[in-house]
Structure formats: C-alpha cells, structure tokens
Image (cartoon, rainbow, N blue to C red):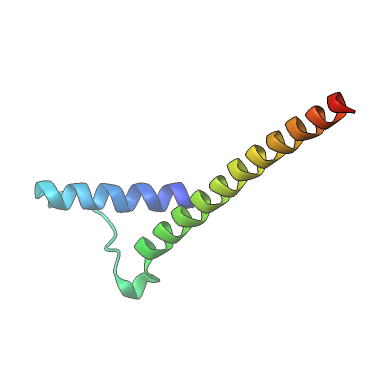
Length: 74
C-alpha cells in the first residue's frame, strides 16, 4: 500500500509539473484522508527506525570492543 501510494503521489506531481492532462489519475485531496501526509509520515517513521537501528549497532560494537579490551587487560 505504501509503495502504491508513494508512486501515485510522485507520478501525479511529475505529470502536473510537465502539464500532462491526459493521464487519468485519482485526485489526492485533503478529503481523501490526506494521502500525501500519510506517505510523508511513513517516510519519517522509517527513517527514524533506521537511524535507531544503526545507533544500536554502533553501541553494540563499542560495547563488544570495550569488553574485549577489559578481558585482555585482566
């Protein structure tokens, strides 16, 4: 659903920018649940989750290196 909506919004914006009026497309309006806002919100959530995952990996690597260094010093 996300990919479908994202492609529809992107294609509509491109068609409007080049003046294409021949393509039949659904009019995304605020009365249609604000699909643009939903797609943007999903993008933001995915980016935040990705950043948190990368942060977790970095912290894990640092902790493993610290534990290895402490084990070698013992």
